[in-house]
Image (cartoon, rainbow, N blue to C red; front, side, top):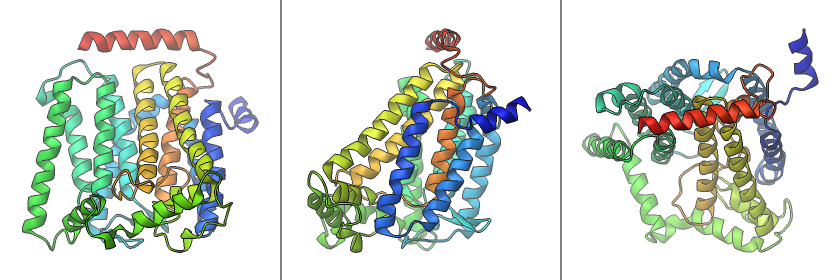
Length: 390
């Protein structure tokens, strides 16, 4: 009864900063999404995402680590099912979505989160054996399987998943030479896929051609293929310092994926460089707040899972904004908690829920602030242990 009363009295526990950042971004997202399309489905996606965040952040985070392997296998199963029976949406020419309980869902988003939780759990228990056999058995197989299943439909997401995993492994004490081996293995798998795609074009229709076209377009070739980039940069230029005002942007009528992949261009057009800069700072603030949670985590798993998940969210945000301003080729990555789209919102909320669970302490009513001395002592012990492993 006491726990139930606490739940009703204080449903938002954990890091206040992270709660504020996420709720502000979610509330702000209604303005550009409404301007670009409609908010009915976006409201439903955010409401369900908030419920996911609330539920997960009340779980003992160590239990989440214990369930990580089961969650990873579930993600792999969904990815395999998507390859067989997946559907296309939004003009894509690859099967990336499946329908679950009446909702369209992109399993690669869940795979990214589940892989990071799994790797953090394994890294926290790693005994310092960096032999290839041990690393393959404990880590490599998961990264290879997930990336191999995502690659045929989405190169950019595959690269992000691999890079997120590589960053997390590095934070977990992974030696530099082993990181180089990981990159080498990834390149071998990618080359094998390219050869298979060329040898059996019917099995992977248009994928390699699409990747090459995007890279050539980013490099300045085929000006007709630069339509999305040109529209986005024109919208940003029109926004100026203060913007045209909420709902007054003109390029939403011409810009493809205006409520998802290119929503940052619409934000700058309507809210100006000031509004766009504030959005950037919100994600920087989120990363800094997450680092604060990580440094106060009670164990290595808590620290690693927070750093891995928070980096993944912040990095995806930076990639989305970099595409809008023309620094990256088109990737199809959404702006976390702002872009429309159920899969991205739900999985971001799942990841944030895990971060908040760590910020609560053991997930049993204790907060990191109330037990900071123990948290810092454990953090120093974990760092010393990682140093001994090296």
